[in-house]
Length: 274
Image 1 (cartoon, one colour):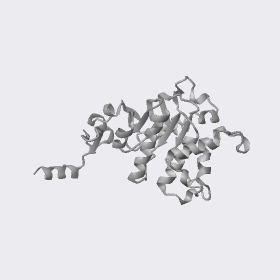
Image 2 (image 1 turned 180 degrees about the horizontal axis):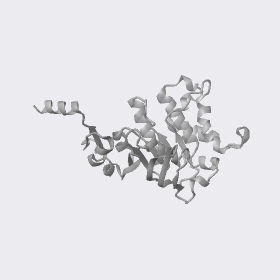
Image 3 (image 1 turned 60 degrees about the vertical axis):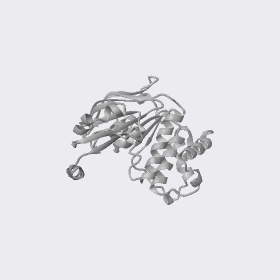
């Protein structure tokens, strides 16, 4: 990695058109850990993630690296050597090979005319290997499935060779197999490469399985922050999501599992008890 410093946001205020949507949020992305940003739609989790990527300027508060460098003080290319982002949606460029798309991640290291990046080919090859897309290097991106394309774009982020990786709902629209593969990759990046990972997730059980820490947002404020066991409790989740949520421990895996309780859930439970 080009830099192993984590990234933190302190007392962040984020607004759209003068209306504050995130209030006084604190978040810390630590090296070698996965931090999951959770909350209902409109809670501010994606906005908070985008602010860490410098795509949404805070109206108050500061974002800084662990070495004390303010994120706002860095030139764009210098910042891009420290932080990469996998956004919710990416284009599907026609007629472009997978290896070239992965190579897009090398933009912070290139001069004019794509010159001066001696480490680029090795970084691209390594990223494709980690994401399991080496065998499709010469294929056009438009020929790939949604899950394959997601892994290609993740490989592009890895080729960027940063110490901080931000992912906004990386498992959305993927089938179960690719969801599991993406989550395994995220976990491996933290464990094996020391990456500080911040990831927005809707699935609470996925967060419990992959994250070291969780940040729950509700109404633009941090409602709870800590380990998944500390954050994923009925007392925190029920008011945040506006529905009763039960939390249990899977006896086979020891992982937390959540269950929202709707009217039909209660009916089925009553029927089973009779």
